[in-house]
Image (cartoon, rainbow, N blue to C red; front, side, top):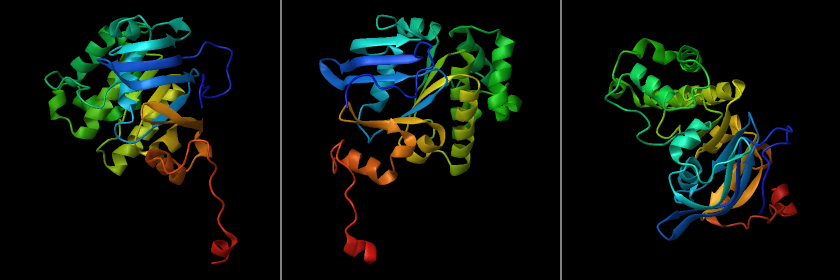
Length: 264
C-alpha cells in the first residue's frame, strides 16, 4: 500500500496535512520510511502500531523536530523546510506523550504561553473560552501550578494547550496512556469536540478502541512503514494484532473459518 492516502473523500479544499514519501532520521538511521498520507480538513485519523513502530517519530517529524526527506504540506502550503516554531505559526500543534505541560507554571500561565507561541488566529479570551468549554474541569484550577494536577488533568491541560495555539491541525501522541477508563472516556469526548470545532486531529494510539470511537480512518504502522490503511470500520482487533505481529501480510485476506469449525 503505497502512495498518498486520503482519509475521506476530498472536500475540494487543500488537505489539512499531507505527507508524501516522508522518511525521518535519528542520525543516519531512518526510523520512518516513505510514509504518505493525507488528512482532510476537520477529520480525525488514527495511527496504530506496536511499540517501536515509529508512531511518535512520525509525529515528531511532522512537527519539524527531526531531519526528514520527502515532503510535507500544512493546509496546502509547503512546510518541509519550516522550523517547529514556524509550523506552529502555520497552524500545526503537537501534544507529546511526555513533558506536555510546564509543571512550575499555573494552569492559566500554561494556557497563556501556548497562545503566545501559537498561531494567534483568535483573541486570547476567545481561545480560552473554547478550551474551557472542552475541558470545564480546568476552570476552577486556573490559579494552581500544573504540578498539582492529577495525571488525567495534566493530559487535559496538554490538549488544551494545543487548542490554545488556535491550531488547524492537532497531533496527539497517545493522550490516553496510563489513564483510567473514566478519563479515557472524557478524552474521547474531547477529541470529538475538537473535531466539532473544525480542528483536524492526527491521533497516535495503542488503544484500538479509542481510535474506533474517534477516527474515521486508520493507518497501521510497523517497522517505520504503513502496512495497512483504510476506514476504521473495515478493520477489527484481530487483524490489527496480526499486522502488529507479522502473522498476516498486509494484503492477505482473513482466512475463512472451516465448515467443520463453524458446525462446532
